[in-house]
Length: 115
Image (cartoon, rainbow, N blue to C red; front, side, top):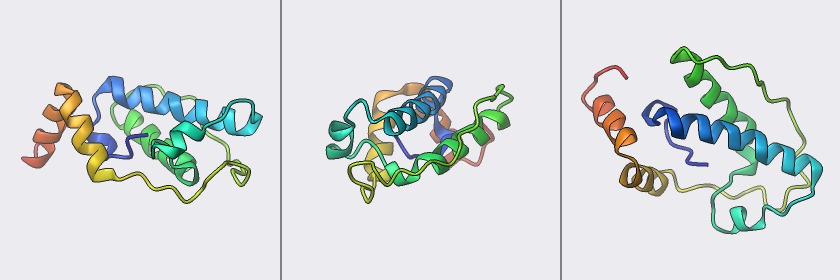
């Protein structure tokens, strides 16, 4: 989970993170795979899963994408660690370093241009 403003995310990162929110919720509900590595490395904010999904879905719809996978409320109290918070500033720096398209969207937003 990048946890950055979804408006700066390129199509690939936006859709990819959206898919991952569904995957993480499924894994939590089934309890069949450990998410310990994601949690230990601050890559997953369990307590923000639905909120994050909804923010990504809203951005997808704003861009005219067809979103048909709402995320139901789910009790994540059985997830390993719930108070992990992703360092959004660090996450954004890494995303912008890795992806030229996200960097272009970020620069446009900084200039007040619509993306």
